[in-house]
Amino acid sequence: MERVVIIGLIFAVLVVGFILATGQWAYGNVVGPLVNHSKLPQLKITYANSYPISNGTEIILNITDCDGPDAYPASAPLMEISNSTWHIYLNSSQISNDTVKIIQAPWNENKKDSVNWYSGFIVILGSEAQFQLIVPIHLSPGTYKITLYTPAIKLPKEATTTITIS
Amino acid sequence: MASTDKEFKETTKMTRMEYLFPVRFAVGWMFLDGGLRKAVLKPAKLDPNSPSFVGGKLVNFLPHAGPFKDFLLMTLENRSFDVTFLTLFSYIEIIAGLFIIIGFLTRLAAFAAIGMSVGFAPAYWLGSTCEDEWQIGALLTAGAVTIMLTGAGRVWGIDSLIFKKLGDRPIANVPILKWIKLW
Image (cartoon, rainbow over all chains, first blue to last red; front, side, top):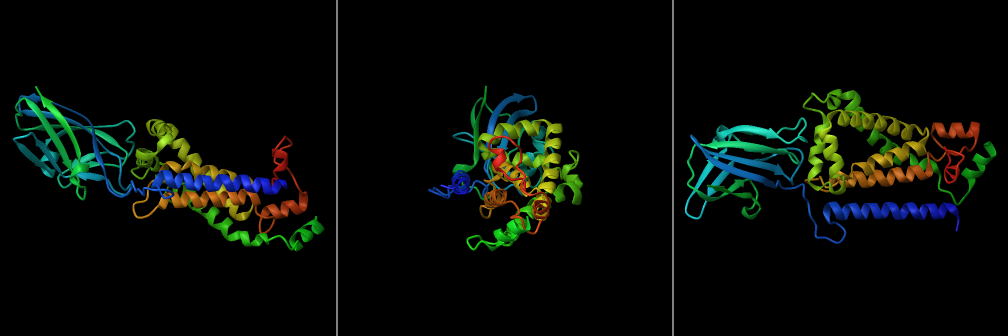
């Protein structure tokens, strides 16, 4: 076989393999299931802690956005704190007002996570930050579920975590 | 040299390499445009103190970057490396893109283009309306591989002029590389 043909075959196999492999990896477009991780945001709470303080309850949440478009950030304009018998919602302006400190992850360069009155928590795709909130409510000892509601996201996919007040 | 050139062009089995130019221009311009946007048209994109700094955008690739995640994190957490990497990347985009279009050291330029198009695989999963980044990467990879194999086709480019003047030259006189022609 001519050397040119061998080289052509080698690169043909490499390119075909690369295209099919990366397409399957990124979108499942060879054998499925089809996925598009870039369509809807997916907030996740990677760490949570809480403790009572004199003027309420301090809640610490590390939040990241691990899916969704890169053109605009994910948001959570509603936060729910609940247990089996009780719940309370914090709206976007309460989230913003109660957030006393935001610590950015070291890999957040010029793209910073934040809060504001209209969107609540604002998290850039791939970034992570620790949001420290002082909620002006004294939570009784026990375990509570925290849910962050992101517009257009179905309930089972909303970011949740549990905190314990002792 | 003239007779070799004539003989080559008259070989009935060969497709004329002039037909390759649209691919050369498309692949070359994608890189040239990408580099010009960052380094010339909006230099703030390479300024780490600017909100437009593209280095920060690497954070968007993290969630599904697979085996590239550690490299991305290291780059994002090391600002000076990030700036250097992106500045070099932008100028290589400009040089490789321009060389592919004008057909100068086309094989080497296309080799660099392969590295860049494969190198942004961590972003392939991004495409909220369709499979945008993967389609770009796949087409640029295939185009750059094709151009690396064919070179400029010894037509419509500086390589053809050099070939007419100097004839064949290998990349280096060592095994394997001696089979690869510089132009």
